[in-house]
Length: 77
Image (cartoon, rainbow, N blue to C red):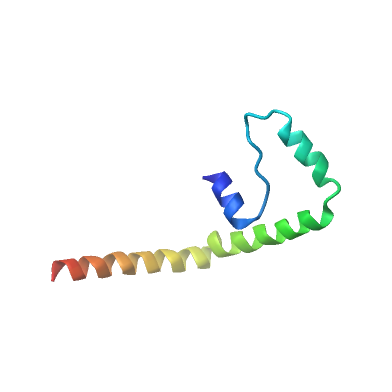
């Protein structure tokens, strides 16, 4: 699930655990990729604010509850 979030958000990098050299190789590459790191940091911040901030989470939770309640009301008619 974490790798899906990272990929979908564009907020980081994922390396396959079956490749032991992949992680240090990617870290080494990123030491020369300042703009890429800044861009992904911004995407991570935006993703966190949208999906994990208390207000955003509460709004999504409320919308989900309303959708569930609405579908149950419709089914009971």
